[in-house]
Amino acid sequence: MFNLPPKPPHIIHRFLNEYKPLVYKFLIGKIKIGIQEDLDKIDLFRWASDNRVAIIKKPDYEIVLEDAIKIFIKAEDYESAASARDILKLSVDTNINRLLDENIMKE
Image 1 (cartoon, rainbow, N blue to C red):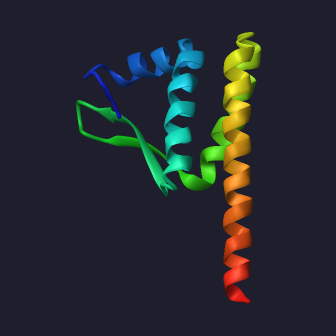
Image 2 (image 1 turned 45 degrees about the vertical axis):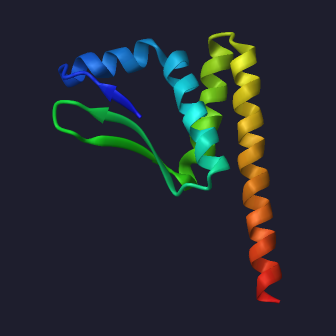
């Protein structure tokens, strides 16, 4: 987890917006770990000023990955877009396998 410095919120927000490709590279790495370890949520950032934690919940992994692909394509970072696509495929495959396993166990 990344600890954000005790800066005013508008400074942090501006940083996150100005460096979206970098932030999304961090996010897709964390999501990949979340998928591989079957985590219900992943912790991303902790605000040093008040100890709050930003998280992504498992149902939102795919949405964030789709957003990452768009951000990378806009930045013409096709290698990172391909990496996000591969992680998205891993997420979808993992969900399909989990659903199949759950249905087989019901029979």
